[in-house]
Image (cartoon, rainbow, N blue to C red):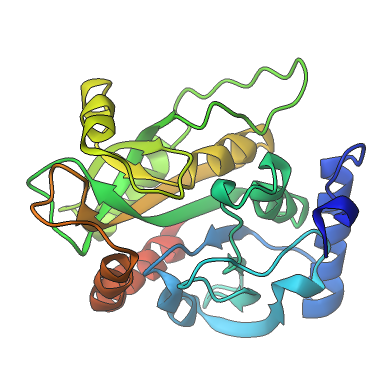
Length: 276
């Protein structure tokens, strides 16, 4: 599907497109409503198998507005999972990144679809670079806040949304009940797709950032607009440029995710199991 014919192109109403996508999910999965949604970033994919019983798995491209993922590490499916206590989790393995150039509407479409499907909680995960030099590759950290360095927003027109406690302190508390050792930090979303320069990393550090990446912040804003409670996790896949003693590579990101996936997937599944 070309950009010119995509359902989210102007003048379409992105919320109406999300409602259509949610109806597709109901039709394709047989599940009328989902309670929680989770977007699985690099390294987090196996968590879907631990959350509960898979009711249905569908190619994301069969749902209105979704595209095939451009990045290795994203499975390209939507999965409906039933937890042991009977709740339904929508597992999103098809993330559109801002650097793909499709526009913010498509970046946040999965979040708006999750809200339209009934989800009250949005769990956002990613693989990212760490600025804090005491962190190491393979370490999960909670996102406490973000700095949006994309110079863009999913909000359109005179839409003013309060982002205080965007990354819910209540949900972070639940995560620490599962793993009291979890550290947290401020996530800085850059535009990408290039990695940050050492000077940009130092800038992020000087303005209060601890984590650098290319996703999540725009999605979190859209989730708050939709009225969802947000929990964010970053897997530190590498130390950021100028912090790391070696050059950065996407292969390093994939390798770190694969090495950590067992631990972080169990962590994420246990946290989701406690969310009410």
